[in-house]
Image 1 (cartoon, rainbow, N blue to C red):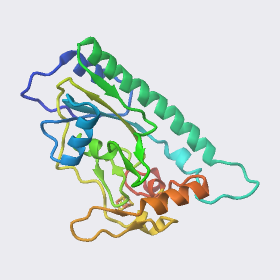
Image 2 (image 1 turned 90 degrees about the vertical axis):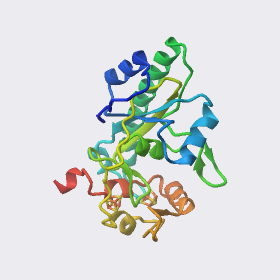
Image 3 (image 1 turned 60 degrees about the vertical axis):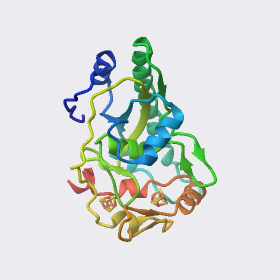
Length: 239
Ligand code: SF4
Ligand code: SF4
């Protein structure tokens, strides 16, 4: 679980206490007055204008399920990808519950809150852009860094994490950590992407992804987890 820093602002203690009791694998807080990325701030304010803190919650995706997935469909074979899908559904249920616990504590403190779904935010289909980026919020909360795969890469679980957010008016202790470095720039995700949707970033870019190529491949193949499965960071395959 991410370390809580000492803050100077008055913390909403009743909501802060709920965070430490959540039964999830990762909890982090990005405070609006500290976020450097303007786009994330805009997105959060567009959803809850009075937001003070973005709480990011994460659950580990089990490598055992990931190892059963395949980007290839074989006619007549058992659909092992379904086992992974059910695992993700379970994790999402846990995340949604935690997100609503934060919202409930906020409401009881007389504060507004917006618990978002672990199934992901609404997406603008024209650009495949989410109304708020969970991975950028997680990065701002110090839970990991976005890697060459375009995914959040955490120290504890690599990219094997499911995330959700709760926006709240509560002022909470920030867990931001700019010193974090997780991606090894090993290029494995780029080389293994079956859709060739990932590319080597140019100077000033952190990752290159053709979201449409990725989406088209996932729809046609019935799923793809290669960029998650093949990443060596915190992977039991490389132990
Ligand atoms: S999900 Fe599959 S297709 Fe999409 S970027 Fe990752 S490896 Fe490529
Ligand atoms: S596979 Fe390598 S380059 Fe890609 S996200 Fe993981 S560590 Fe970074």
